[in-house]
Image 1 (cartoon, rainbow, N blue to C red):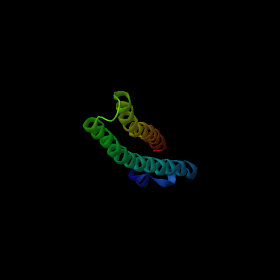
Image 2 (image 1 turned 45 degrees about the vertical axis):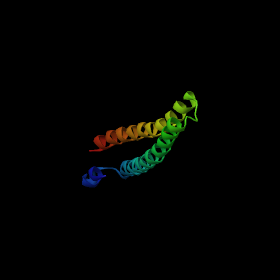
Image 3 (image 1 turned 90 degrees about the horizontal axis):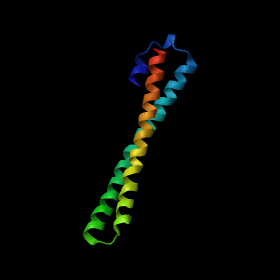
Length: 96
């Protein structure tokens, strides 16, 4: 966002500036979503891991599948965030 604020706004067309700002907002929302997902899924995966190992209640496939799902969800959100950040960098470089 600092890059946008420091750019010479008179040289950037309003439509292009709106698109870059919209992408910045989308990136920030995705970043917050990923952070919340990491915290929540991390706690659930830890509970499953500890509970499954200590209590021996889960079959090994169910254990690894459950832990894997709660680890892969934040990883997918991170990939989406990385793609949005890369696209935003391309737009900002193109507009400067």
